[in-house]
Length: 119
Length: 114
Image 1 (tube, rainbow over the protein chains, first blue to last red):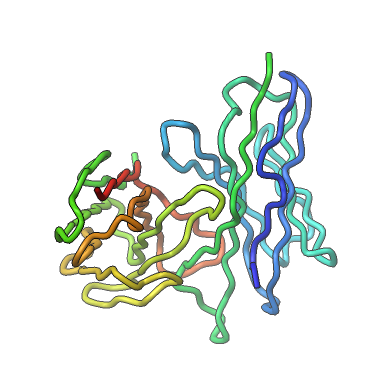
Image 2 (image 1 turned 90 degrees about the vertical axis):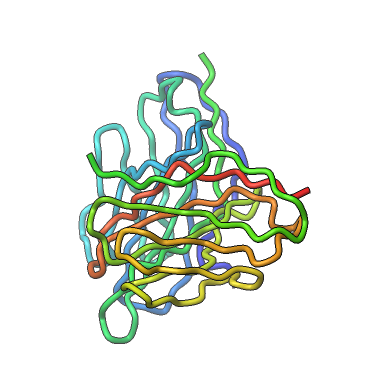
């Protein structure tokens, strides 16, 4: 079963508008972390934002916010006031704590969503 | 400035060749990872290592091996390259413990096997 699902292969948004990129996850762990990365056409992976499963507040980092709905197992990325430089591939990823409560840092990634920002 | 470097950005090899992809990090991270990225499939974990000389299989280890002789260096080896190993390969590193620790990625190696 897919642990991270991104159902939008591609999204389009007008410059200065907000856009939501969807991510759902599947885990039986109580303790886990959710990440979003951006990959521009140059190829490097850029960390954007993190949400812990026990965090009560939704994470925010500048124009990025994470809409975390634990009961629905969704962790959607919201980008406000889109800019042309936001055009990129976006990946959602999850880290699960193992039974011992520690993690070797493994991440499971979704398929990615290509975001195109139109002027 | 934290850094993960990979030996090549682009590589073209012939079927059956032995291929080495090198990754070096300067952050004293315990964990290192090798992923391959294919369209529509996202990033898939090939192997990872949490200490020198330690390695663990990821989700798609078949056809690959790894080596970690020094903490800062993690090598991916294709023993006999095949055309279905044409892909983008990404190396990453992170601290050993902690759910919130991000992975830092190298720039990637685009490998073509002909």
